[in-house]
Image (cartoon, each protein chain N blue to C red):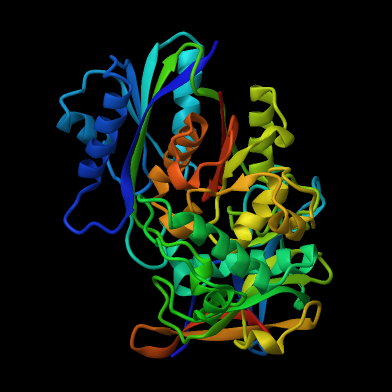
Amino acid sequence: MTPRAIADGMFETTTDGSIALIGGYSPTSAKYHFPLLDTCPYSGATDVQRVLLSRDATLWAWTAVTAAPPGYTGPVPYGFGVVELVREQLRIITRLREADPTRLEFGQPMTLVADELPDGEVPHGVLTWAFA
Amino acid sequence: MGIRITGTGLHPFGRFEGTTPTDMGVHAVRAALAEAGNPEFQAAFCATAYGGVASGHKVLGALALTGVPIVDVEAGCASGGAALQLAAGAIRAGQYDCALVFGIEKMPKGIIRSSFFEPWREEAGLAATPAYFALRAQRLLREAGLTKEHLAEVVVKNRRNGVHNPNAMFRKEVTVDEVLASRVVCEPLHLWMLCSPNEGAAALVLQRGEGGVQLASARLRSHLPGSVLGEATPLSGIDDRDITPPSTLAARDAYAEAGIGPDDLDVVECQDTDAARELLAYQELDLCAPGDQAKLLAQPTVVVNPSGGLLSKGEPLGASAVAQVVELVHQLRGEAGPRQVDNARVGLAHTVGRGANAACVIVTR
């Protein structure tokens, strides 16, 4: 069974099975954002264009979540952090594939990957994203 | 036009099985009104985030004190500061001579579940509040040249102060080694570096006039767009070095309204949701230059969190800011007992949280 996306409009799945995050770009403010909004969150401009964001990033902040927060049924510990997309210079809050903080370092290259989470009793029922 | 703080009331912070938020509010409001000589107040502002519909009415209804306008105020951790700003503004505008401000809260245990986050963000594991604190802490450590030992020292300092606060939840001293031996919640934050959401209530009576302890300013600000690691926690953002944080916006507004600067402060109660949050507040409130936190911690030029802070008291959101001001009033009156700050004349209370909202309240005598 195909896993359901964690939320509508967050990413596209390409034919080779990889994913791309869907963001917005406002020519007025010359800034990217994620997820895609009608209004640029920095300037309020409404000329937002839908864009696929680049997959390459550097690691900017990270930790591991050691106990399941409310509403989360996936594995613990799990990696959590902020990556900065190289092309867009946009920082994104994200799950990280690496759950051991000592194995990560500031500025290391990261790439967008598909990630799966349980959907109730279905082990890989939800498709989301992470950086690895 | 001056505003006097003539009454203070507090319900201890902690866990109280079987006690409702209304019960706690009644306790605090009754004490504050009694201390002020039971003046007739013309308006009431009730700060609460989890209280539900008409929380303030329930408290004043239980005291047979309804009839005046009663407004519940929610601004996350800064709810009490928001209520104080509204009350102070109304008194300064001449609308009321006397206003009652109180905060009540009974929080669920564990990680705060907040309607702030969409359900899918919870499902994805992106709504783990302590993890956001951890990312911010990691960044501060990196950029200010601080270590986990500095975080532990903040906990040791505040817990030492909390020993002398009968209204605090935790009243036992801890050591740096013990803090670092507590379990890691989210690296670099250990369990004892995080405050506990809990229960409590606090109340203040404000009256137009000069003399005694004055409410010099109460200012609330929200975040400017853009910052990825502020309390607003958007999913994406830009480099926020040039974006003034809400705490600084609120502090500078409050300093300007009070006609004082950070150098004039004798005592500060600040938002130590986690130990790094207090150190970040040092620079956000202009108590020190960015990166000078270690120096201020080692050689304090101002006493921070003599009440024990949230790390000792716990944090009942709506009551938190009001209780900070209760502490400052006691400090300025010289009634703080073993935790008294010598000759305290100017105090600042700072809260920041979801929204993002930040509030700064300055009291003087």
